[in-house]
Length: 165
Length: 193
Image (cartoon, rainbow over all chains, first blue to last red; front, top):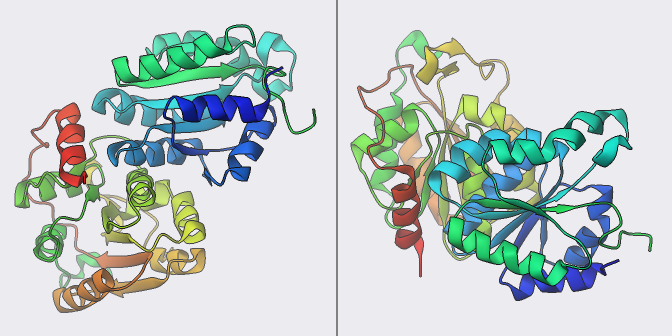
């Protein structure tokens, strides 16, 4: 299991310097660490968070948005009609609820289709693992720079330490 | 008073007036006629014209304002847009960025899609903004009050919210001619430094 502070430090080390989002339990530890560091700006909806990140990007920041995968549905139009067509990169740190069908019913459909959904809208994505974490974060940074579009780093349950270790 | 009663100014008149008092401030302009008209009246590199992502104008402007706290940031928004992204009024009210000026053109209709009514005739957006925590909130009905209040807001610490009641008239303004990536790049260059 990756410690939240190690994960946040790795993101800051590759230049990410604007953090916003909407919480999820899987992301609890990461958000707590961002709050300890005083760098987390809470949003009320995922499309708002993506919009704020776009503004921050244009003002010179490297933004990240944290969200549950249900939030991908909420912000899909912003990703498609803002980020993708205006070429505005943004790191999306998305928790994978409903993975393998073992979660509350509201997460089943998105949990099942998320990778295909991202492929369909042509958003590059990768799932973080403890073994490949260094490479995963480097891939994120490189892909953001190269593609100038949003990039999703998927967090599954238990890969990054949550609020209760 | 209903906008169609005929004494209100148009959005284009309001935009032209506002732009007289803006120099190098970034201006994020919501999708639809507001962007088209602003582009026609004065196409400045400090303008970020939205063509999609309805409801997100204030969020985008807020991102700019938070990233650049020493720069005054303005957004030109519409009643339909504000209603769609109403949560952002709360986010602005909670974060209270001093450099944030939110201008809303309120004609009580979705003008770009054929003047279907919004609900801003019964939901006063200025009162919502005030309750959410905006520091300076004004509602204006004519050009003289618009000039007075906008000049005043530009001098004050915000967040500020200027609701301009406008009529339903739309200029004969075509789509913004720049490709979206060009809009991004020239806006970034114009507000850098």
